Image (cartoon, rainbow, N blue to C red; front, side, top):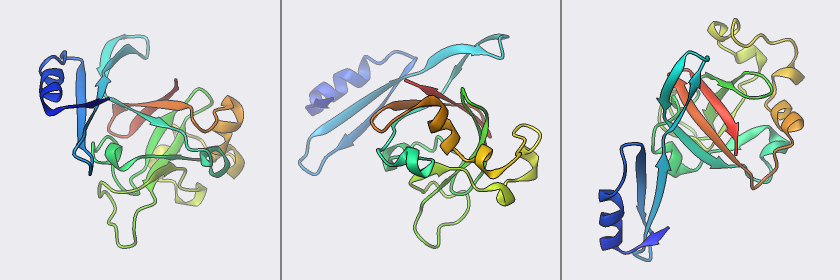
Length: 173
C-alpha cells in the first residue's frame, strides 16, 4: 500500500505483535508499506508455534527453469540461510534440497545475496541432507517436479516458512 509519512507512522504504530512491516521509499518519494502477519500452525502435530515467513510471487518462467525468484526486498530480510547455503524445503510434493543462488560473480557463500532459489544438483547436495531428502534420480530431485505436480503457474503466490535454520516449508496461496 502507498502511504504518506504520517500514514506510515500511524500504520506501524498500530501493528499487532503478530505483524511486521517492510517500508520502502520509492525514487518518487512515495512510501510503500508491506505488512506481513506471522502465521500459527501445527508443527508435526505436537503444538502450535509461530513461524516467520515470506511470500513470493512465482515468475512466469520459474516453472520452466525449476526455480523461485526471490526479490531483493525479501533477500534483505535475511529469511534464507545465505548465498549457496543449502537447506530443505518441504512441499506438498516432497522435500527438496534448495539453495539461494543467482548473485553476481565474487559473492561469498553465506552472503545475503542472490536472486532465486533452486536445487543445487545431485552431485552437489550436502550429505547431511540425504537422510531427509533421499535422491533417486535427477528428475525426482529437480524442483521442476514441484511445478509439474502442483500446476503452480506464474503469478501465483507461495508462502515460505522458516521452521528451523536449515528447514523451510512452502505453501501455495
